[in-house]
Amino acid sequence: MPQPTKDAQLQIRVSRAEKTAIQRAARGAGMDMSSYILSRVLTARSAQFEDLVAASAGQATPSHALAELNTFLTGLTAQDLRDAVAHAPRVALTPFIANYIAAMVEYGCARLHIAAPSWTREVTALPEPAFGTSLLSLRLHLLTQSPAAFRCRNIFIDATLGARI
Image 1 (cartoon, rainbow, N blue to C red):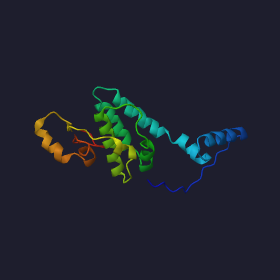
Image 2 (image 1 turned 135 degrees about the vertical axis):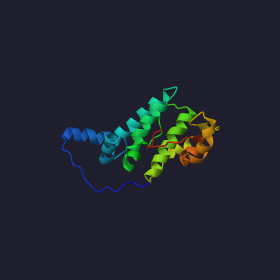
Image 3 (image 1 turned 120 degrees about the vertical axis):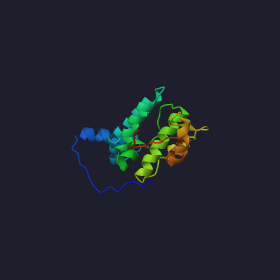
Image 4 (image 1 turned 180 degrees about the horizontal axis):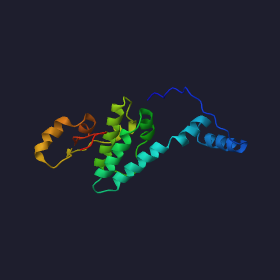
């Protein structure tokens, strides 16, 4: 994944003691000061993603939590999405939820023309199809209209990232 061009500068005033503390922390993390500070500042989106994923993991019927995750992912710019989903969710997920979230992330990345994070490829597709409705009469429609990111994972739905039913 190509890194964005750094074409701006930010200066902050700190005391000598603060600068020394930041240098020490950056060295301890194996990073230069700029990378270290950016890694600390830009984790808000990632933490928000993790919280929303955790909310969907803890529910028997996660549709509302997945809708909130949908809203969050839809509102992100390409760089914000990269930052938010750079790391795989740390919470234990059922195979269905793991696939659904991976598909949402892949769909969002494709929509913004950016590479999906590698962790999504590590989520094994569902062995059996999962349909977004129990109505048998709609299954043919779902089989043909589901977005590719979901179909590849054996999930057949009508609405995707940015859409609501």
